[in-house]
Length: 78
Image (cartoon, rainbow, N blue to C red; front, top):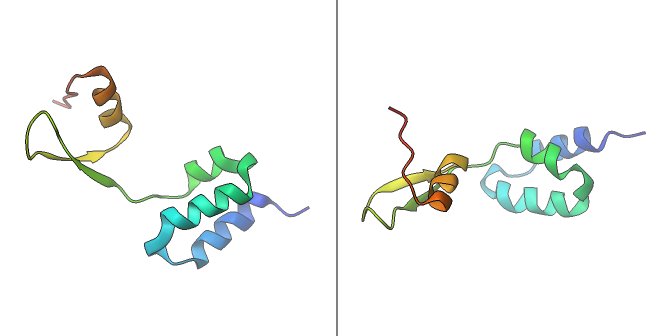
């Protein structure tokens, strides 16, 4: 039996890296049962956003940033 994860990762290596989000989305539609595993293994580009509270401050969107937005607090790494 062919391993779906191995085939999916092999395909992602051959597709254009500038369209990784589009390619990953299409792949997840083809093998939805492997969504968690693929999201863990495929690197995705970081996204930027502008902070609405502190005007003009640019930040990277990561899980902690999303958590701080939901909680309404600013997370400090000091």
